[in-house]
Amino acid sequence: MAFMPVAILWVGKEIIDAVIALSQSDTSDYTKLWWLVGIELVLAVGSDLLGRAATLSTTLVGSLYANESSVEIIKKTGQMELSDLEDSEFYDKLERARRQTSNRISLLSDLLSQAQSLITIASLIVGLIVFEPLLVLLLILAIIPSLINELKFTKESYGLAFRWSPERRELDYLRYVGASDVTAKEIKLFGLSDYISDRFKMLSDKYYLETRSLAIRRSAWGSLFNVLGSLAYYGAYVFILLRVLAGILTVGELTFLAGSFNRLRNSLQQIFARFSKITESSMYLKDYFDFMDLKVQEIEDGKRGLPLPKSLHNGFTFDRVSFRYPGAEKDVLTDLSFHLKSTEKLALVGENGAGKTTLIKLLLRFYEPTSGRIFLDGIDIKEYDKATYQQFFGVIFQDFFKYNFSARDNIAVGQISQKEKLELIKSAASQSLANEVIEEFSNGYDQQLGKRFKDGVDLSGGQWQKVALARAYMKDAEVVILDEPTSALDARAEYEAFQRFIGLTQNKTAVIISHRFSTVRMADRILVLKDGKCHEIGSHEELLANEGLYAELFSLQAAGYQ
Image 1: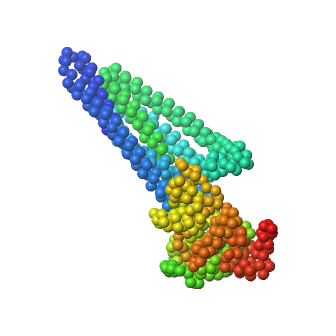
Image 2: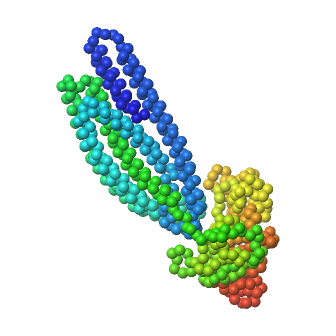
Image 3: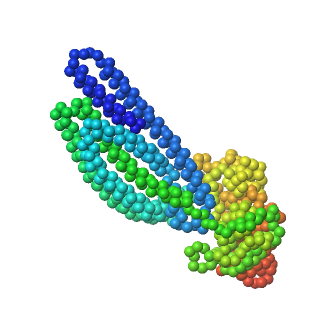
């Protein structure tokens, strides 16, 4: 496409000169004229077809790029440690990178268009030099100020976007909170609509004022330099007209030079504006690569490359383990020591903030202890490959995620490699009693859950928990961990669920967190945490006999049922 503009202008010049020549002569041979018109038609159609082909290729490549970069971001996020994912600065970087998955394909298109424009400009400048070299100097004087202006404001625009990353995330969050089925009940009940909308308006107005100031200054300076460019163009146009009137140039050459200068001016403005866009896109694209280049924390891992045991023998040992979250001022766990025996059912009990869930995170190696060690069958768990080690566990957390997938896929996420095995999924659902929920649906296991997508149905809290619990049964794991997964069930349903759980994990090791002592007492032993320390440990009967914290909490809860 690069040579099309100059070719069309040249043929146009020849057509005008041919028409004038024919009008001033007695000949009626129009063959050359019609040939020139035919050539111009072919060039015009060809230019249009090439333009459409370029647009089509940009659209297709853009879709592929958006898909691939989104996949890369998802995979990169999956490689990060939990401590990274709980860091607000990480989310700023993630937000900036995510914005590049669909917006930055224009960079490739602009680069290719830039190469095309440079060739076109070079060919047009050659044409100007052949007839009037002075026009090239006028052209440069008209364009350079615009280039400097665009580069200046491009940098300012990127700086503004970079500084406002946290606030833009907050605006996106307020949009979600203010208009979501998940939050709708509390928004209505607590009358939060005005509060959220006012907070959004305050923050968005502040952002608007900053962007408005930048936009006004950019527009004002751009307008000034555009006026200077227009004056330069019409100065050149007057110069060409004077040369024609003096008989130095033909009318056809007038149209060629005027058209070339105008196209050159527009092309140079486009190339400088595009250069500005490319510079800006490169700045933003750097955010994407900065995110992709984030280093995954190098946790001391698998030094000896030991294979995991096929089954537990001695179990897990916490040896003087302490832990403090990054940036926190005090330890969550302090000098914690205990032994989880093979095939034992251990319940964790303690008041809120005692460190129960943190203990589970350390056992799963989501975090490493600040001090102390954790052993699996006498070997430090750091000696195993972390990803392989984590496959040893089947876990359901209290804040399990409600996937807006089919019922089948909601259960299969517990062992996604087995998602095609419907019988295994049905077996897991039967063990968790989720089958009682799913069998009521006309679409059965293909029923869409959640209201986000068409034909989806929402479940009650207890029904969701049965589905989530089935995920733990999907995986034939050696160790099963349940962190308050049945809190939404009524007392009878939870008791039945745990009775079933104890039976199904008879030859497996299990860790249970629950605030209901009717459930906790089913465990072989109970570990009572207080202020991040092992306050007491033993069976239900032993702890009651100790008349310590466990006995106190048990009595308080029992009194509530009397």
